[in-house]
Amino acid sequence: MEQLKAKIRHVPDFPKPGILFYDITTLIGDPEGFRAAIDSLAIPFDKRGIDIVVGIESRGFIFGAAVADRIGAGFAPVRKPGKLPSTTVRATYDLEYGTDTLEIHDDAVKKGQRVLIVDDLLATGGTASATADLVKRLGGDVLALAFLIELVGLNGRQRLGGHNIHAVLKY
Image (cartoon, rainbow, N blue to C red; front, side):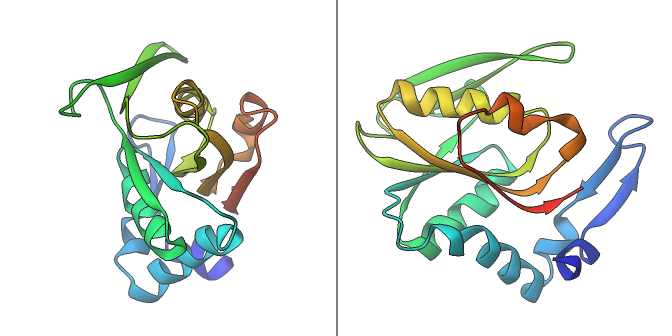
């Protein structure tokens, strides 16, 4: 995993002072690194009967779609409001300062489908928790949530209590 970490650029003070941003564009721009990242996210779920992978806007689309292809599942995006063209289900959740909202098509997940939620980063867990709630409201069974990076000190796992969490890299 240190080889993957070495391919991620660290950008201090982005998007604001005091934040260290883990820029995955350097990883996904490297063919071997990208392949290894997708393998690390997909292999634990191969042959586990996943019906659909739900990817969270926007970097979750990159990883989620590739994982879905790799494990033979469908893919559904979760997006910010107003980005999906058909009828949606919406979840609003708390941020450190304010709220945010996500949407998924109301027919993206069928009742009883086994779902893997994928995103690039697990931080506080708010976005992932809201996504899991959306999937459950549609009748899906959240088998697991998979992340390329987990920021351990922000305790996102606790917010996702009860869910199976797979994180490739931990900081």
